[in-house]
Length: 84
Image 1: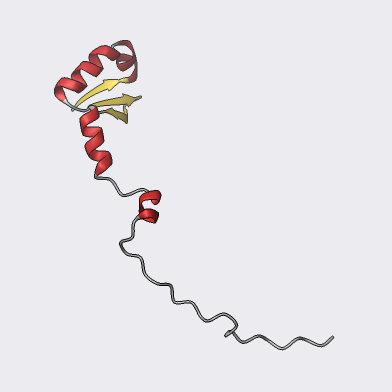
Image 2: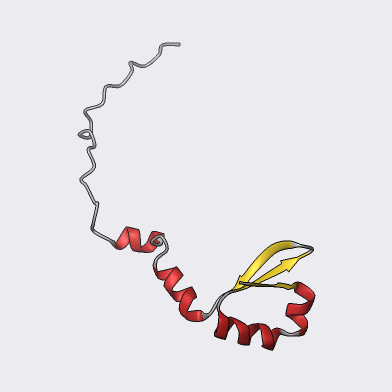
């Protein structure tokens, strides 16, 4: 994976994009610190599809659903009122 300084990445973005498509992910660094990676769209989609499911998909999914064990309504004991 090639590393590009931010200044070079900005100045030669078309070249950065072409190298990403032909050679794979390209790292961008700022002040010597790795900051970002430019990846081809096919790899991004592969990574996104293998990532954890979203909250929406978890809520809509029937797998792992169980009946909640809730006490019967009115079965809880109440404290007696306090006299003033």
